[in-house]
Image 1: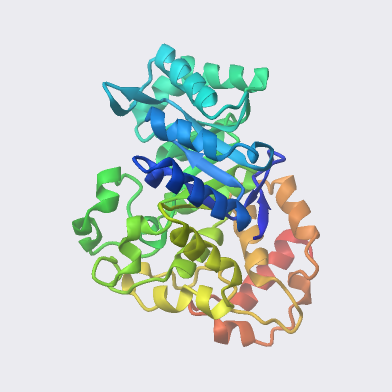
Image 2: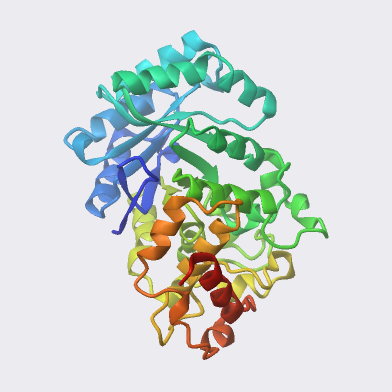
Length: 383
């Protein structure tokens, strides 16, 4: 298992994480078996948004002995209301159910206190101009959470939150199908097949792309949900591209987006966990999503670097994807962020080492003018 820094939080997480949603209504024995196999294979981060009391208690029992080795992502605003899950923005309910979370998981702190499911302007305003963000900040000050996060499916509100500088982690739904949709697509639209019949869909949405780049520039780590599109991407009949992706391809797509630290895969059996962690031993060919996505007009990314590194190998050993990523980040604002300059300067080989052989351009499935990009990077960064 490989591990990544979670933005600038100082927390390190496994690049494959466990989404625990599908453990609800399962027996303790099954929950224990899933969590055990996850930890045995190096998974260190768990997302638990569910408010149902029994699943919280069972997960708490299952992680005994692991607590100091795992990163818990728990949600503020997820409540058990009228004997069912619901979102709440009432501060007394937020407090009650977050304290219930800590009690049932038998922990006196939560690593990532995730403000739960913020998808509308009205909801955003209510949270960031009201008591909930104040509660999250108080929890952080008291050491009951280590960092503040926010989960969202809406790139507009997610971008607003990131730009405030108040959140350290963003949980966001990322996969190649969602990335082509308009920024104002609601959560129901993400799952509706008719949404993808829009003839104007053509490549990654600009707001989504800006969101990922802004997170990278501001050192906000992203944890990913809906990597597999609830399984729709794995079947050619349900995939909006008419082509099925494999689990390694879908995971690799998310892990190659800027700022992504961990991809949280929902599992309800040990076999599903093992299927997800196979990614770590998959070959470059097995991970490669570019061949499939470059063949569909809906995902036209002609001329745009997808950071897939399909262009390699480079005789000068330039990490072309990283150079292009830092170039894109530098162009995001009028003044290049110092962190971007520093990261670029630490590369073993930079754009100045390009010998313009053209091998990379022959390999690139998205027809990126890489030699021109290297020249541009030399001008921007001075080397």
